[in-house]
Length: 74
Image 1: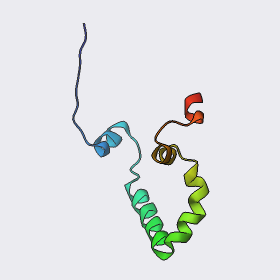
Image 2: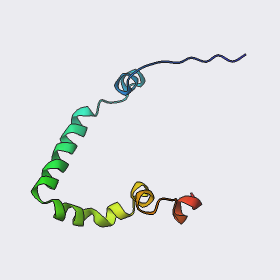
Image 3: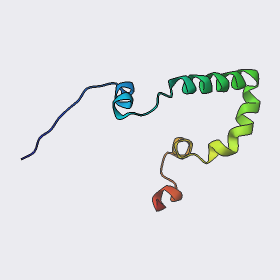
């Protein structure tokens, strides 16, 4: 016998139910910090982080439109 239960809840409700910490304030503070850094010097921010960004899978997928060899190996 199979039983299927579907629960409709928001991610925040699930976090509270599972006892996970509320990181909303930290997330907002981090986004504010990043926005300020970008607003102060957009080109400098990108150049500082270009090497890190170029290593991310989503950016590689966006640029190359397919999986890279590293993703095939994992």
